[in-house]
Length: 482
Image 1 (tube, rainbow, N blue to C red):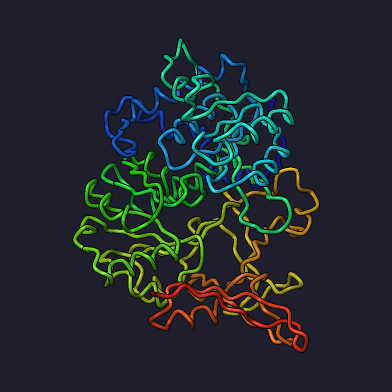
Image 2: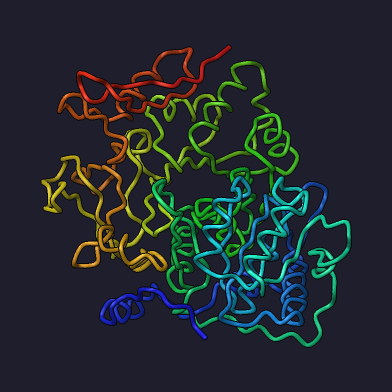
């Protein structure tokens, strides 16, 4: 049984295979290629798992779930935080041919209910330490609405359906049955904010290429020690190159519960972390911590800081090399596919002022006006893209797909960008971030960048408010130094 999704047209699939983008390998290969290695794969607090141990733990859990009746072609809803069990669970489900949704740990009942209504999961894996599952009220309601679902929980003191027990139970003659490489491996989450949260089906072929190419560009190796302090289940933290990229290269992932400087700086020093990924607000907080006396010596091993998830202002970007003491790499990607990087040998001008350029020669990217017509180079408009790792449709969302794609299969992300003569992309905002003041369109990010120049401002967000005279007016929310 396979999961229905919008496939690439056959001529595109053929081309992507011929060019070597799609290699018809399951994502489980990222782990199993290192299954005999005693190199450290994950550090989670005082726990360390070698690649051999991580692979064995995934086999054990997969075998336990198979004994419970979980079958290939089914789906699972997973909500775990930045813990080693997230990776064990992810690979175990892939080994079974089960496609998971990895809900973020910050998600609450509305998101979990929305995901479950779309995928009709056979399995829920959750954490008793999450507020939703600390008692039984939500779980009982959830199970009643999905009567055939099986539940396994981390930190379940009752001992019944305990995730750790399932992981520790030895696999008995387990043979992996991953789904075919051109089928759905798992579902990523749309970053959109309107309506029901949308799911993005990612195949083994397209996602593996994204990880593999990211590793090449970012030069991850066995010596890579990557601090994962942003939500580990997020696409950015999974695949750009993220934890999967580290595992592919044979490096080490060091987990942190959050990106606070007080937590991360000592972890970087203790484990000699040499690369990490942050979002712009976390960068601001790191810079503030250094300004207030945190020792920069703790960051001596850090060589590369990736920043993505939102537009990084040039003001903040320029401060990173001097104040944090490492190289900056801007990352502009989306769970739907397209990923852009500044390259490690780019000029400071490109790294500070752009969000890089697409990672694949067959990424097709252009800029459209509101009617879908191409705009001249350098003008600001809608980002349109298709390629070997950009999806072709949201899961069970025909109505939204009709507006999200043009007739030629190009995806409209909602981002407003410009492209320079060398192909570098600058993110100018999002369509929904425009404020229409009496017919004058104001890009929120432009004003935010001006506000960030003030030395007392740590972070800024500009939103629209209703105005009786002008229709809309601007309202700025600021995080300032105390």
